[in-house]
Length: 257
Image 1 (cartoon, one colour):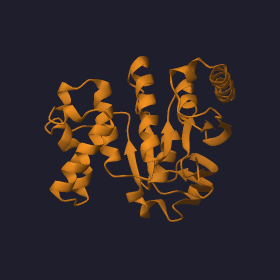
Image 2: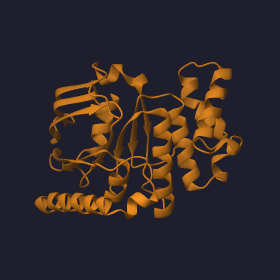
Image 3: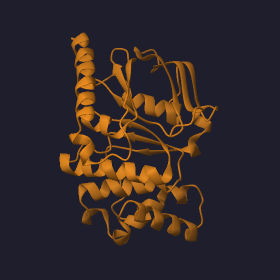
Image 4: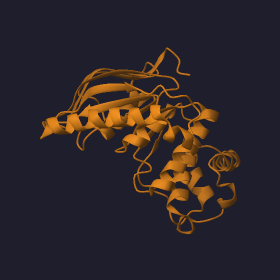
């Protein structure tokens, strides 16, 4: 369950690039330890930008943002990123791909190998450690990407549409696996998606954003019990929440027209 102490705090955060238009306008929220927060909204509303601000990859233009009560750029070791594309190095084995961020942090070879092995076991790919990316399916490549992020033992996992390019059945299965891993590792998640059903299934909180500039239009609390399974998707409560968030998203998109 989330702790009452914020792990990420945005207070009237604004973002613009140079002299360009405002991208994010006065975004405020407290993210608690253990939260799984999905960001959903029309294209251009700043979902991915919020992840970049949390990670410290981009500076804020106004307001205040903190991660573990310090500036995001000073908290880089607390976070890991999973992108839409797995971005695996084709000339390295699965195991060596998982070891890359550990090597960059100066971790010795023995510890790198052991950590990578455990991370691959966690995502169900222990037997594929010596394979190469070309030998894997799309879903398996994304598991490797997740294992690589988890090898850093992050407190916060930032996921930018990681399953967007996968078929629905594979996506549903990976959603369930992701929550099972989170039960073991207890990181806080920020998850960008265009799928309302995915957001409701994964999250305990959903931020619905509006665009031009990006604003936090509404927060939806997802009061569904964990663990979540395929039975969750069949439940009336889940389907009502999907309908509610869909209505909110459509109202936002209608306002943009």
